[in-house]
Amino acid sequence: MDFRSSDTITGPRTEDVLPTTATAAVKVVIVGGFGVGKTTMVGSVSEIRPLTTEETMTQAGVGVDDNAGVETKTATTVAMDFGRISLSEELILYLFGTPGQERFWFLWNGLFEGALGAVVLIDTRRLEVSFDVIGRLEERGVPFVVAVNTFPDAPHHPVEALRRALDLPDEVPMIDCDARLRASSRDVLMTLMRYLHSLAVPLA
Amino acid sequence: MSGPRRERRKTDPALSDPERLYVITGDLDDSERAALDLVTMVVAQAEPSPTFQPEQAAILRLCQAPLSVAEISAYLSLPFSVVTSLLSDLLATELIESRAPIVRATLPDRSLLEAVMHGLQKL
Image (cartoon, rainbow over all chains, first blue to last red; front, top):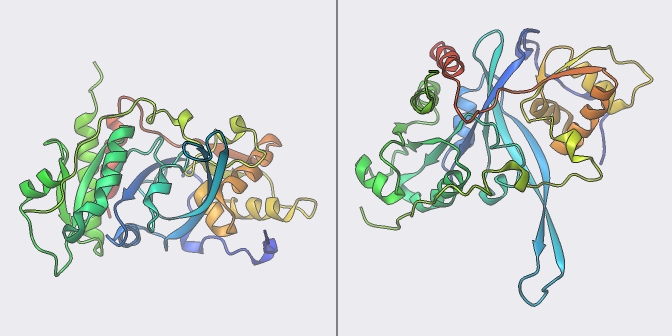
């Protein structure tokens, strides 16, 4: 692995440097099928130009077929785009969205663990590409809202029909959005926070 | 509408347990890595000097102001697990300080969520 001389490393632009008081971070993950606009949404609300981090995953496979008993390993590099919103002088929200390779996100240890929740971005023309990620969030008990990215040529379906097709419980919020617009993406995050707030049990 | 339909899944206790998820670690000790999240905030406690490895000097230079592990990984173009390994060394020698993120607890904290909403409203 080549490492550039530290003199050539470009850090944050001057205007992107966080104040020294910024010590508390929270994260939200934006998931959905390939091409539904996850990276667009991250970019539209982020205060910094979205950055990319990556990780190399290995999954140890247990032989089940003709290679029974033989442990196999596969390695994949998974890239992750993310953005940042300074909520106050102390509190920073990080948004992670990934450009595809859905099945690998869930191997990224620590991506979903500790996330406040997730946004499932869907394209009504290709609902089925979101089925798997919704199922995986359910399995992990990660709370989520569903945001319908309104593409100009996408057919409009009543919310109830979409809810049935996605087999979503009534309490899971659904919201229309335009992932290109900051205000619209902000509203999706607000919907997620209100939902999480409703799940929170008030202190007795 | 017609077309494919999804079927709801139940929360799987085994899958919701982070201990059951795994990722490449090289030769690293898991217990050291576990402390660092993608959004753990890191601040340098020292100025870089020529005696440091280039990677460590670069981290100290980047982290004069608080920065998340994800941002450090992005700016250095190094994989997350490589960065957490470098950071673990710097933490052990107290050249950096880290602040763990606020994570979703079993019972989410309403005042935290209200602070997030307040911040989003200003966007």
